[in-house]
Image: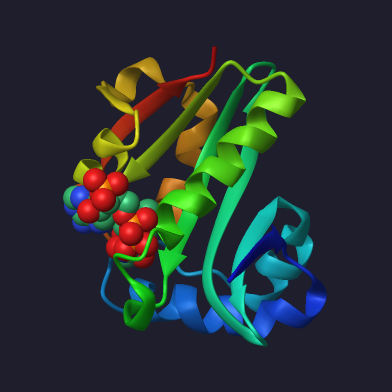
Length: 151
Ligand SMILES: CC(C)(COP(=O)(O)OP(=O)(O)OC[C@H]1O[C@@H](n2cnc3c(N)ncnc32)[C@H](O)[C@@H]1OP(=O)(O)O)[C@@H](O)C(=O)NCCC(=O)NCCS
């Protein structure tokens, strides 16, 4: 398994993976256009030609970024892929000088196990809510907000 920044050849498989979880209301869907435009935000985990996981790091503000679209192919769950992708995103954040990384998720236990702490959504900047309007759960959000402080 190799963890590396996504390339254009990975995009179709990333979309399939994200669509799979979006269809179960586990994450927001992403159009092909969105993924191409944001492809430099994504890291992938590959086994041969197969994309088995992906994760995006989206810079929000001077010292804040969001982990988005963390998804692992169900056939490869519980093998450390999600953790490796998450820590690759956190490493990238650190290298960019970001102090704090947050996520909005239904998988709080996974993030708590990996160093995140629960926070109140109200503590996050207003600008992050722009995307929520696209969510079919809006305004009844069931995701929790968690943050990771980078030393
Ligand atoms: C959440 C997800 C990314 C975890 O990926 P994974 O590759 O299966 O997880 P890992 O094998 O890296 O697990 C790392 C650690 O977290 C734990 N863990 C994994 N999933 C967990 C969960 N749902 N709840 C609690 N702990 C979990 C593992 O037991 C492991 O613990 P350990 O280090 O003590 O052994 C994956 O289940 C997934 O893609 N879920 C659906 C999409 C989703 O909801 N993504 C959330 C972000 S939007």
